[in-house]
Image 1 (tube, rainbow, N blue to C red):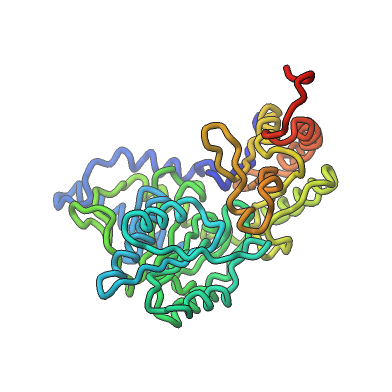
Image 2 (cartoon, rainbow, N blue to C red):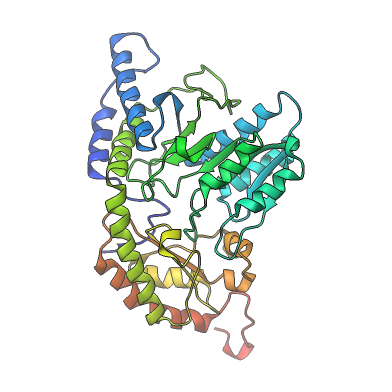
Length: 398
């Protein structure tokens, strides 16, 4: 049976969330309708909203259901940016290097179409943005800053950001902060109010809920301009709401919140076993992200393998029945260096040797041991192939 170690990409639906989803699919009624069936759907929707809110210590009115984490990030960033332009121009968006592409693409779209100016803030070799770096960037011209956006935890290397310290700096200058917590949700205890964020993005399929459902947590004091219009069904979002998706999301969110401490502790043990075993099996492998266990996501182990293409390792391990990830983009079949690793100071060649292994519900010691057993042979074969731009002598071409 294949071993799945790519939970950062998506994690299998939990049985109770799946059962709730299937049952809710049988309910007929638009929650915006005033007849009894519509009101039954609305009741289910609002109960789900309460569960999602409680899972991150928020209020139900602060939960805006979306089609997933990407929409939540776009709504948070673009919505805050547009709202901040209403009083006077505030073109600057402060973003650390190494953010998820949902953030990168959103701010680059605003730069191309709406006059935004992106300040890419440097991160350290562990992938962390320091509060003093953010302070210096804002102090250059506080009145020109529209918002700050930062990951709660890096989706590739797993480094946890000092979120409350960063948002405290932003708040000091009256700047709203959007936090992308998609990778942290279910692995770290999240408190929306204590975070100091104006907006926070989460997604269901990263915690055992369905794909295609997410939420933007929007503070009572925050205002946004909607991405699209047509009914004002929620704060800042129009469109008929997905009741079944919300119900399943609520079930998964409640379980994530109830079990987060035990789940994180169990995963951390497996993660540490994996990290130490990889180091023994492949001494050349270099751990990336924070080496301090408390500073990285409990299910994340990210390595670079010198002289070896990450994609080569991925495919070789896939053939062996192991699902992992490089965590980086691949355009038109051409391997690309991880933008997260290059932002952390790695060379392009080193960054292309990345492999991300992420653990989640159902991961066992046997899964970890199976990966470690297969890795040395995969690394040996991948090293012989080298990087994809290596020149091969004509006499050796096949």
